[in-house]
Length: 238
Image (cartoon, rainbow, N blue to C red; front, side):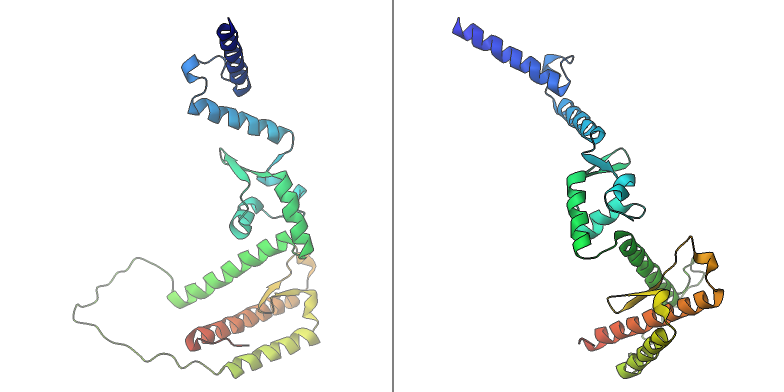
C-alpha cells in the first residue's frame, strides 16, 4: 500500500515537472529529453526577458548611457562580459551585470560610447598606415624569375627619437596656443581624435576642422613612430 502511494506521488511529481518544463504533451520517453530541456530553458529566458531581467543588445543604452551601436559585442570583446546568451541573431545581456558594469565604468570615468569611437578610430588609422606600407592589394600579373633572389638592404636607420619628441613638443605648443582642446581629445597621452559631433559638425569652420584633422594625423603618426623605435631598440621610450 505504501509502495503504491509512493509510486503515485512520484508519478504526480513527474507530471508536475513535465508541466513546468512544458513537455507534458510529449510521449513519456521524450518529456525530459535534451531537446525538451533546451526548449524549456529557452522559454524561461524568454519569460525573463519579458520581465526585464535580460536586455537585448539594442537596449543596452538604457542601462549604460551613450553606449554605441553593437555595444554588446564590444563589451564581450573588451571587458570579457560573460553573462549573455544568443537567440537567433539577437544578443541578450543580464540586466544585473550591465548595471554593475555601468557602476564600474562611472567609477573609472569611462564614457563607453567615446571608448568605442576611440577604438574604432584607432583601427581605421592603423589600417590606413598598413595600406600605405603594403600598397593597394590586387591580383598579381607578373612572374618573378626563379633565379632572382637575395636582393636585400640593411635595416632602415631610423631618425633619433629626440627629433620625433621635438615634433610632438611643437604640436603640443600649437595645441595649447590655438586652444585645440575644444575640438580634439587626447587619450592616454598618445592618441588624438577629433571631437566630431554629428549635430554640430556642419557649423564648425571648415578651416578649423581641416587643421584639427591634420593635427591629429601628425600627432598619431609621431606617436606611432616612437612605438616603432621602441620595437627596434627593444627599450621603453618616454
